[in-house]
Length: 147
Ligand code: HEC
Image (tube, rainbow, N blue to C red):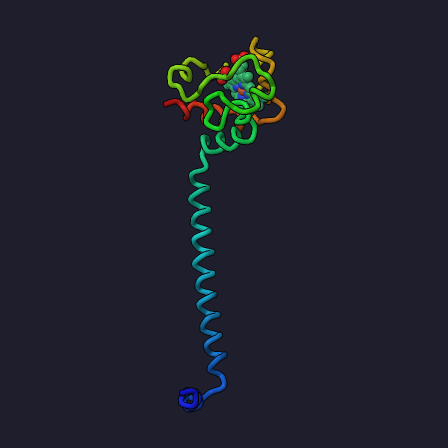
């Protein structure tokens, strides 16, 4: 058997055959790379398109607020216990509760903090840390949570 196979390879001839095979794989590899690159680009574009105020607000919330307000905005973040907070923030997913909070109160709480609003000092002021746009995005995100 091995002898037969050897003959076959010889008869089709070229010592380049292995190289040709390699070139073909290289081309297939390149084509795949193209497909992967194109789909990554598409996914990126789709993400960018969906990057509206609420999406941006969600990201800002996760980075700055979730530790106290909870990852879903229910007012149950882990740091409240750590800071021995006497009060819990509101559950923003509750429709009635969310509706009772005015835009100006939410914005004032975010920018000036709890103490300046006659509320808990545990709620920090973010006026120096976040831009007005970012505060608007947070407001949009908070409103989007109401169910
Ligand atoms: C260190 C903990 C902590 C962090 C971080 C924090 N908060 Fe608060 N926040 C509180 C507490 C506690 C209250 C409740 C204050 C009260 O009722 O006296 C509160 C209250 C609020 C309120 C008033 C309505 C409510 O839920 O009681 C808003 C609006 C608010 N926070 C938004 C934010 C946003 C937006 C961020 C992030 C940019 C943030 N907070 C980060 C602790 C925090």
